[in-house]
Length: 406
Image (cartoon, rainbow, N blue to C red; front, side):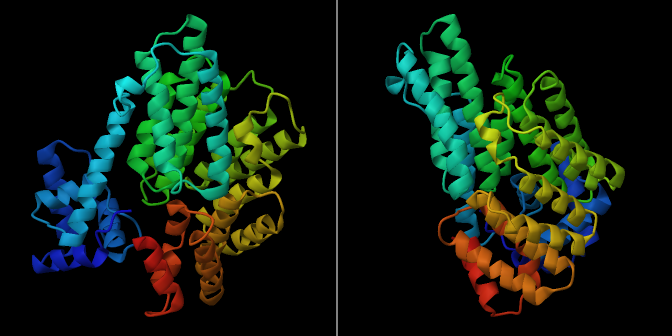
């Protein structure tokens, strides 16, 4: 996790006698000179305030713009930035299949190796639901690097090559989602984009990959008032729906519908939210189907209800979200990582509804899980609003800060 603290940014800005608006103007000028895209002025002002309050992370792109203005992190923060940049370079290297020593890549791909990769691909989804992305990130990227190296360097028949390419796409998708849950958004987008390039003619895998890209876009859209990410999510879901239009799997269509609901909520489209949630429920009412893929087994009525709760929270209907999340958590069918994620979202819903004491109580339960069986940076970051209102020196503040630094 990046460790450039909001107080460091605020202290640097004040040392130059700049207010937030002036800082935004300087950052926009630096972006123009570098030929880099940047948020609109009003959005950038909100982003700067959020960075300084610690509500969200300073991305590498904006870190470099700050540095162009003369910002220098503390020695501890600088060491963390270097480590993250080295990891990012390595991750981008694996996308070209360069992390696996060629001596370890088989000359010829066998049916046994294909079966092994299939088992690994299925297993990564199941393990992610159990222990979270932060625990699996290195392993997941290594599995994809291995499959991609085989695809690029080994010998195989045409039929086996098609299967190998689909497995590489599946492993890229799982690694991308795991990176998303681990808070590595740049890596996640790179891996998911790589999966989209590799999916070939597999409609289920294509739909899955675009639905994952939409999930990330919707998540990123909650960090900024810019509606572009939410609209991007809906475009990705249109691609997913088009790919899956002839597929009989109810869970695939429910996945697309419930993610359309959460993206539509960010665009203040209540009619669309209600329509898409109703569609997701109707799809699941059709029951299980042999065409349902293994990775979609998490899509249950409770999961649809959780998406409805997230939509209501995005619409500012915190009290409704609280009740929905409580109903979700009362169900028995949530995998461990999703359960703690929705417990964190219950905490921020309580916070938004004004019940700060209960939000802290729920947040402490979440931290207990995150310090034990589940490791998910995405879940931890959900608790930032609760941390901002927690009393200085409180148990929650101390435990959250310790978890963030670990």
